[in-house]
Length: 405
Image (cartoon, rainbow, N blue to C red; front, side, top):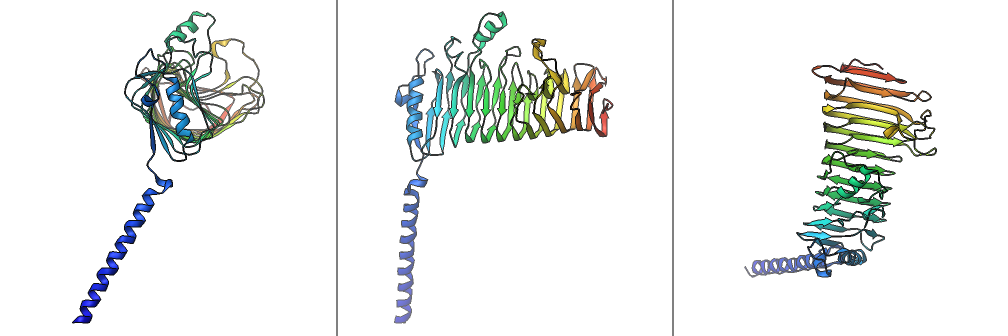
């Protein structure tokens, strides 16, 4: 009996010791610097005021400086309210790879477009790693500049509302961009970028207000986003590869465009692009590839346009290798951009013009391996038409208008 009692006591002692060791391990783990709770820098604590007439730029810069200088992950918090901010450059290299901008309020650009109109960018990140932007509204207040541009007076080119350059592991989620002076969001020279749940809104006649522009970047994903603007909803520039666009609603705007390409003689190409489950409403174009009519080393290949719905779209499917907006100062040459391996799969809806499919390719480098699969586009309740020039490829499944490839 005594031995059994001693055995029970030993087991209790061992269990208690193990519990203490486990508790100590847990406390040590959560107290270690690598997993510390993120620091939070509220811009109000650095002088920001939710007042359209008070300049909160320096408060935002102060919060960034502290977050970037922290060895632990950090959060910059913008509470509800409208905060006036001039142009800011957020530069790396930071001491941590986990800075979050949590925005519950609105960042407002100066109402006088001249203040930031010649700076190129309003909110600009360069050489950063692991920056995320969650929520919030960016109000570019671009209407004054649009009016100036339409008047033909001497106007600044305008500022992009949000730009990322030479950065990686970026996330933009739940952000709204309103009335940018020029482009809304630009991703240039970046790797591993995710844009999700973003809303872009500007007037249908606002000039050069592309929704999201991607160039010289790899591994960019754009999901569940709604864009209405005066230019391309999404534009894809030279040097872009492994781009995935899914569940995007576009309209008003100029569609989803690869290009313009071929503006430079020596130019990187575009490849491995997927555009799927997209809807276009009242847009100038649907899915488009465009290049200037001049010599270039550029190319576009391995492109998939899949599951697209068109509603009253002027040019639902178009390749334009004689691109020249406004028909001014056109180069008038043959495009050197080589377009190949482009698939249009499950494209349905209505065209606002008689020609719903137009392939106007280079006479020197014809488009090759263009595939139409299960396409049905109508014009005024009748089959639309197709037009092909210097394009080669195949059609399969039900294809309407009848293929001209």
